[in-house]
Image (cartoon, rainbow, N blue to C red; front, side, top):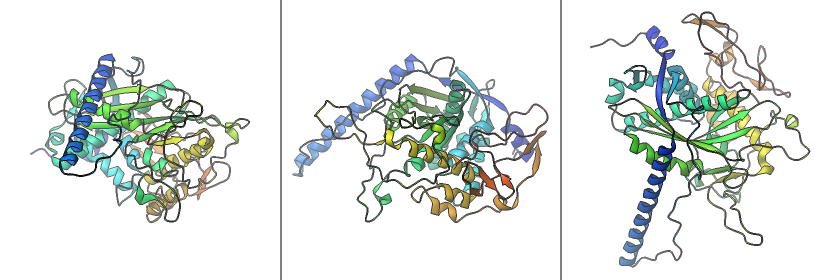
Amino acid sequence: MKDSPSAVEIFERLLQDVAVSAVSNAALVGSVDKAAHADDKRRQKEQQKKAEEATREGRPTPSAAPAVELRRKQQLRALPDGELATSVGLTYFDVLHHLARGLSLTQRGAARGLAEHWGSLKYIQAVQAAKGSLLWLSAEGKRTVKYYKTLQSDELGHAFALAIAERILRNRYPDHSVSIMHSDTVLRAGWALNTSERVQGQDTSSVGYRYRPQYLAEVWKPSQPSLVFPIACKGHHGGATASYGQLASSAAYVDGLHIGPWNETPGFVFSTGLPLDGPLAVYALHAQGDGGRLTTPPGTDAAEIDMNQAIRQANLLPGIQRPHDVGRELLPAPGCQVRPENFPWFGRVLAHTDAAGLTAFAGAGRATAQLLTKRQGSEFFRTFEHAASGSVQDIERKLLDDHFAGTDHVFPPQRRTRRGVLRSPDGPLPSRGQHRQPRRSGTGKHRGTAKHDPRS
């Protein structure tokens, strides 16, 4: 029996350059359209069957049946060749770091930040480079069964999608920063996503619509309006056909949030295939649009918006306003819509949630709680504080010939200040748009520092 890899071997593997196959072309768009059409026919047959059963059993049937056709993102298209090649180079660190950061505010682990570290590192032995440098499932990854197999494909699907989405956006907007946040955590600042989140005594409705993007990518630059891209992603252990169905399904999820006018929000959909007998493959499509940009109200400069202002817990009405003729009102479509009058508030929510994701990842529970509303989970994080978040500040570490100083674990924010600067007990931290660079030797890449600086 082969011995378990040593810590050094694990670190070496984290930094190993590997590649994952990527698919985004016109043929994929056609296959996804066919999968969506087949799913609509299946849903129609199921509804017809339920209606017939109700008639036979003497149960009342609704006078107006709900729409069978699921609302999906329109005009999904292939990514340009310059944005997504047929093979994408990554490191294990890129992939697993995105997974851990993406999970940091989901309240999945009782150990808070530490749970996300171990939850991502467990996949270091689930995939391996083979057949050249393309990633395949390892023997250990193939042995995973039942619930854990589904969890593995789901979480690795998220990890590869987020790593590639950030790569695309950084190349598309080279002079901007890119922050990726868990969508439900962001949206809870403004909506009760289900009935259990409604506040007793307040006349508010829950969204009650389960189709929402899993993540939001914010492309931002200090003193400029942000651009927000919803991301829907899934994973599976089957072949290409399974990805067609997942992308058709993801088109409904990514369309559950509109930022600005109807059907103008850009977005991404991903499906990652982890077959037992072939290399990993990421299937990706995107939608363009003029929405998603958090423009400032007339007469207001983006630099005047105080990102350090505490965010309020809003109770916005659910629903997306459909375009309609003058004098003819239409019922809102299900989902969430950020209207222009709420853009400044939503921008602050994104900034605070991004900073909270970093502090949660570093185990600083109290700092995380200060940045979130109650519905976002402030009480959950207030109960945990990792010892290193308050006792360890300015230290250096050397890992595989790279020198690290001032990482997100060493400098978690402790309190907010007025000028958009987060402070630790020993002094100010970088504000939004400033980057703390590691001191390192050798040819190591930018690793170990926070890719998304704390901001408030």
